[in-house]
Length: 147
Ligand SMILES: [Fe+2]
Ligand SMILES: [Fe+2]
Figure 1 (cartoon, rainbow, N blue to C red):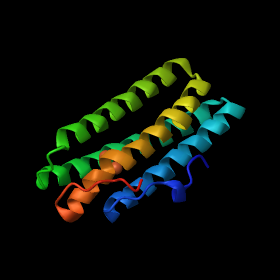
Figure 2 (figure 1 turned 180 degrees about the vertical axis):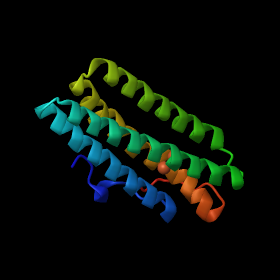
Figure 3 (figure 1 turned 90 degrees about the vertical axis):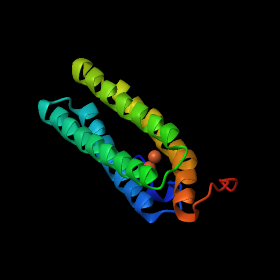
């Protein structure tokens, strides 16, 4: 297991926390497949990575779309900044996949998941998602000084 759900920062909206938990499940599954591929780089293990990467990507697209829909609906002023972070992340995920598909460089992929993805997710939840969820809940921007 790469990420422990209990270590994930929580925000003020349950629908967002639930999505983040699901996200962690997809990332942990992918990480498991990466470790299997490290031991045995068979086609079957490659296909498993491909499958779990696609599931994670699809879920992420949905995760971001749901947050963005809600921000638009409620007229959240920081929407363009939040959406820009989402868009850049999806682009990275797609680029990393294309690169891995071509190179089959598992240590590069593993490093991306272990460091970039984990850091991105935690930082994004602590910053953008926290402020956005507070706005959804209270209608105002709250500080996140306790984090
Ligand atoms: Fe989120
Ligand atoms: Fe977000």
